[in-house]
Length: 213
Image (cartoon, rainbow, N blue to C red; front, side):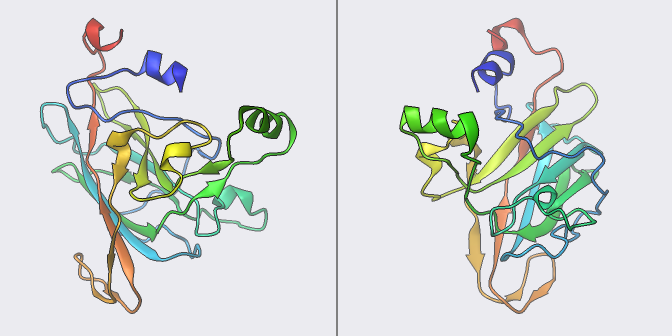
């Protein structure tokens, strides 16, 4: 996080960066906007949406959006050796107006591995192993700095004690619960579901020097 703070200090309304994490996989399957990327992962359905734009409000049509997350048991697809397809992971392209949307599952908090030196370090520091619930995003567009960030679930009990110090207040968003019925995109849900909207703002590729100090 210290390296990120030094190398990705941006201002003027650009979305803040946070840790990349070990579970990114290049070449995730391309998904259409509005598609369900959960791949059958266990969890409560969640419709996530937002826009990708520059700090001056220009929508970034065609921006490449990689997204990945854990399921309700706290595991990413790559942690299941028997899985043969992506689950809770996809790559999307922003629409002409910069918007994007996809269905997945509600993120949940999970512990990082505590075996070996990592566990010893956490114990020595008196810190717990939990990461608050979050969704990973990596967003790129021509002329902009690639953004690597999370969106955290508002109200998660571990927001103030993230094992990797990755939480930033600006990255916390409400995940709103809805009763079963017709969702905003017209899909009919026979069980309760959640929605989350978060705009991803990219800094220019050559940000002013004062933004990098």
